Amino acid sequence: MENRETDVLIIGAGPTGLLLALWLTRLGVTVRIVDKTAEPGSTSRALVLHARTLELYSQIGLAEAIVERGRKMIAVNLWVAGQRAAHAILGEMGAGLSPFPYALIFPQDEHERLLIDRLADAGVYVERETELLGFEETADRVRARLKRRDGAEETSAAYVAGCDGAHSTVREAVSVGFPGGVYTHLFYVADVEASGETMNGELHVALDRTDFLAVFPLKGERRARLIGTVRHEAEHGHDTLSWNDVSTRVIEWIRIDVERVNWFSAYRVHHRVAAHFRKGRVGGQGMNTGIGDAVNLAWKLAAVLHGRMDASLLDSYEPERMAFARRLVATTDRAFTGVTSSGRVARLLRLHVVPRLVPPLFSLQAVRRYMFRTVSQTSITYRGSRLSEGQAGTVQGGDRLPWVTLDTNDVDTDNFAPLTSLDWQAHVYGDAAPDIQAVCVERNLPLHVFPWRPEMSRAGLRRWRMPAAQRQRSRPISTRARSLWRGRGVRQPEAPLARDWTIEPVAGRAAPGR
Image 1 (spheres, rainbow, N blue to C red):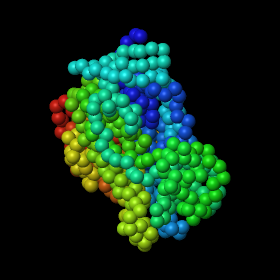
Image 2: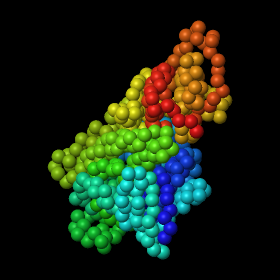
Image 3: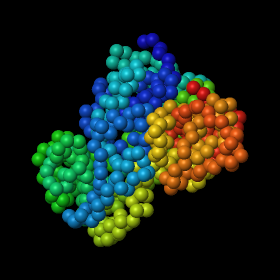
Image 4: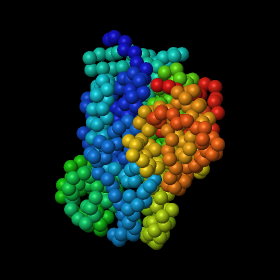
């Protein structure tokens, strides 16, 4: 079959691969995306989109459509031994921290269909029933062998991205390990129609001596996703398990009457992180964390492929994203161990310590906001990356840009609105000195000036006050900001570098024009 060359060959058409393809396409990179399945998934699978993911989707104009199609999860409840121990309203926890102060229920099948449709609008189509057989890496290309329904094909790409999940062909081909383990308990997931007082559109997490249940609301009346444990005596029949094998004690305690099971599956939970995220011209991925991986990788690939930056820029991808992945797995591991362990200490913590400790902690605003930042992934930072330096206020290089609203009649209602260009820009909070205006004009770097508001200081930003003499000499310039670039060096559009107003040129790291 004819050899079709492309910039990036993406293996796997789940949310991560689809978003990587869409983001690269928006940045002018040619892509092919292949998947060995005959059609997209038809089950809900991964459900929850966090605030940071929605912030990233807003940069490519998808957040509004996703929020409209999804269901906001407005509150969280903790139950212990059949009694409600704590209740927290997510909107209050995240107020002022993000334009999306909630978690959003958006089933993976709908998620994938939306991304597939937007890719098709851009002229990119998922190549189904196409499997990667292997590849060879040369100095500047990767030659890949594909198995298609109508025969074999050899193709060439500058880079291959493995987004093919836990059993990744790409990861195996480059001999990248997937260390970790498997929890002993067998879990189930079921999409159900049910009634009861806990079918109220909120998230419910229930603990018992040896049982665990999570209730996620789905869009529509009386629909929910249940995640819980299978009865111990039924675990040996993994392949033949049904709803009749689940542990129902907690379900009955929190008064859920399951009327119909629309989908059921049993599984074991793995806690693993790939040993490497990149190897040569081949990279791998693994829903919210994978989406963040895709965005981080996409802008770097585009910068290298367009000749704006050296290929060594890609070396920053692994250390930036792997550090978070390891923290996430470690945190999840501790949480799962705590809620599923049958040991005496674990039972004591679940049944006696948690119900006494959590309610007073939930009453503290600082704790609630810390929890929101952690769960929403808005606290992810790339401090310590070789791309990150400087500090302005409490914001350091590598931090996520703090979100603030604007008191203006302009079309931009917040400081995130300009990020839709996916390109570099400068932000000034307060007055823009002539020096910074001149540098921005010289570099063709869009400048966005935000009039100072008290909320900006509370968000951690620092105000620049121009001396009166400079203010009188200052001339406004009519450029409009569309991304963010500030200070020395470079910073990712999705997690910009923030420092004070002084720009110090560094060879080879000027902001690229469009």
